[in-house]
Amino acid sequence: MELNPKSLLNQIDRLPVSEALAKALRIAQATGATEVSRWCRLELAGYWASNPAMNEEVVVPEYRTVVGQHADIYGRVLLLESDLAFVAETRLRNGIEELETLTRTREIVTIHDPHMCDLIRQHLQVEVYSFRFSAVHLTGILSAVRTELSEKLVALDRVSNVVPTSASVEAEEILELRPNLYGIGIDLRALWRRWKGTQ
Image (cartoon, rainbow, N blue to C red; front, side, top):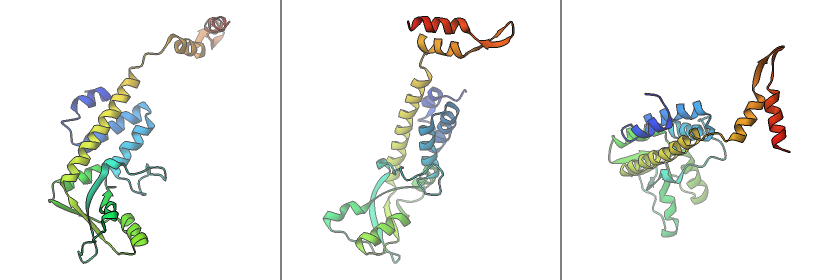
């Protein structure tokens, strides 16, 4: 089956999210869809500084948010005041394949996010080492990524089905090189028609 946005959309619900993203990345690269390509690479390899697709402007998407508890190296849970409840959530940076694997491991997932640990140390003067959350949240993240991917594929499919207007065809015709008596030259008739059309 030919790999294009429409064919991938038809099979997206049957594929693991990581596989669908890998195929979408190939489509995006082949069609020159730079932003879609960057998003696919971020979702596949994770929102880490080591990922070449990551830069200072990239923000970990809100749909990757999970709610849980921070704990120190001894497993003691960080208790928070009600006005600091937002600290009990984090946006997962991990690549999709890793998140898919974590959904199959256990009910409670424990991760170490050095970035979040540093923020808590700086602003709350508390040492934390891990973040625990329910694996149920991962199902929601995978579902959100699948939905985002579907929307991007629909947009790519629309762009690939755009029919050029007569004006754009004329502009392309002018630049087209045509064989002539002396070798190859610009189609002057097309250039003349274009010039006359602007008068």
